[in-house]
Image 1 (cartoon, rainbow, N blue to C red):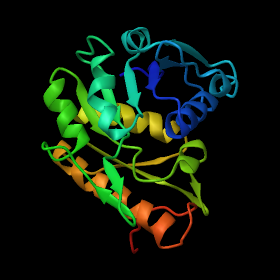
Image 2: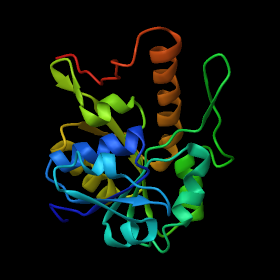
Image 3: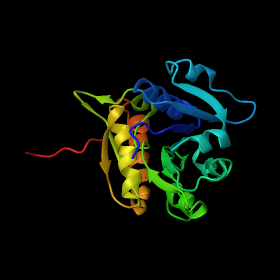
Length: 214
């Protein structure tokens, strides 16, 4: 397993952009996959010379690990635009939701975005993760005197181990939460975070943490 996997990020908004900055500052080289007519110049300028922009297919072909951070209903289409991603690790950072006096989980028929991606792209290695907290933590994972948890779900133990190593080096605390079927629970956890942060008034500087009583 490579100690310096090449990382592509498709989606340079708040989540993808902040995650790219964090990875770059942790020593990873990365490429942002951008659509024609778009750019990620502002984000790339904050990546300390470790990032560049490319077309989505070019970034996906170059990368070992692809982080997908787009609107939930665009995830399958965005992945299709990558071209052949057979054998690639695809990290689904997305959540399906709508707002009705608060966030409402709106999963596809497969049960989660990750399951829909796995069905549409069976030769990719899907991992769900980096979706259960706000964009502020993608840039800075510190939470009090510890780090935010990144829950990872997927079928491939090797893929999860690779994503876990990236997360650890970037300052996150990775937790393997089992098979891909548990991606749906991570999406629900994200909906709960959004409710607590934005609807219940706790603010965005909160996060879920797995603690063990000694």
